[in-house]
Length: 357
Image (cartoon, rainbow, N blue to C red):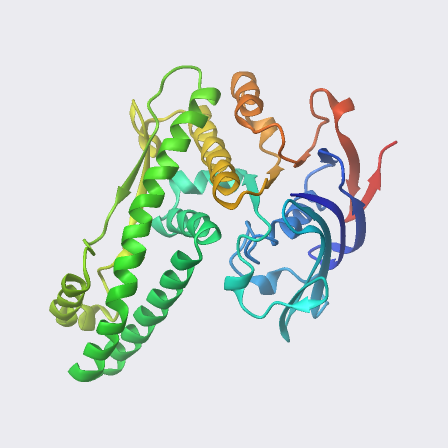
């Protein structure tokens, strides 16, 4: 798929903007703090109605505005041309595709695949386990509706169990929720195991194009607790009630899994150089794009937020080798890209976007 046009109103520092994005390569040029990343953030919403910069949609409307509106014209590989409209603010969220309202996220996620690269991706190495779980969960949810529904139901069940733990729920109440949680935990654990193995295989292939040598990238799935069948999960939850009551939350389960990235020198967080870490994060995002393409039969759009300028010349060349040539790329930066004649250039200043001739 590819973006053809974007109209956005009252989003971050952008009062109103309309951009022709039909080119295969589009570059947003400007100083820091002018609105380049804000526009990429608006484009990135189309995969799962989530920002790659914040977990709170309430931060997205322009200061003083009650809501934002974004209207996307998209050339879809399967559905043809589609118009997507997203409105979000204090009164809630509204999503329509060609005028028809989408009421459930499960009917939307993965329909318009976009992959966002930014300097914040380093948190996949340096941040908390929650950052890494979010990455894996979004990747798998976008390509597997069963995973998305199992994950949603599992988290809802755990949240309700935590509520019962804090208020002193009865054994019968806890047993009822544990019986509901167990099959979802098994489904999430099994699909994560398979999904991470597939992601690891693609990552190894992509990183070989980016790295200077065979650095042995690995993606290790660190399971918090074995969830092989319903009976074992139910028993685990039952046996942990005393501990969980003291802590006020469920301490074991897929919601506490982690994923570790490593190179031949050891854990990437501890031992990899800054260049290796950045290259590994870029490889992880391109691997995500390839999995979207393979699983969905759709060509995702790549949004690169000022990351190409942070790569050394070898890894920058490796990025272009690893990036599928058919992907539409929309990038930002403070300086023009190499071979800038191949790009459609938009100048960005104070939330205003002007096409360079």
